[in-house]
Length: 133
Image 1 (cartoon, rainbow, N blue to C red):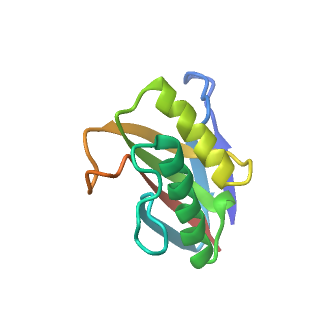
Image 2 (cartoon, rainbow, N blue to C red; image 1 turned 60 degrees about the horizontal axis):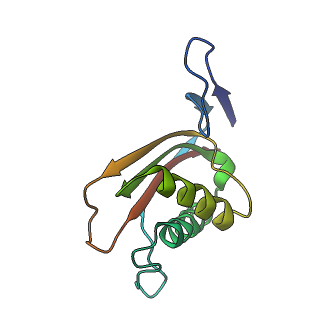
C-alpha cells in the first residue's frame, strides 16, 4: 500500500492539509462522523470546542484501530464545526494534537462551518476515509 501526498506548485501553499492524496491499497475504510461522546454516550465538553475536538479525535482513533488501521492510512477527512471562528480553529488544532499524541492529521481535508449538527449539544464532528492493504 502506498500513499502519496501531492501539493502542486500551481495551487496555493497548503497549510495544515494536503491538496491531493493518491492512495493504492486493497481495502478502503470509511469512518462515520465522530462526535464528542464517551463510551457511555455522554457528551464530553458541553459548549467547549477544544474538549469536543479532543474527544472526537479520540473516537476517530479508536474507530481506526477497530478497523485494523491507523492515522497514517487516512487519506481524506472532513471536520464539521458549529460557530467556526479563527479561535475555534486554534481549539481544533490543540484538541487534535493532544488526542493524537502530538500528531497532526495531515491529509486531504476540509474544515466546514455549519449551522447545526445532529444534536443541539454537538459543536464538532469528524469523519475520515483510510486506505490499507
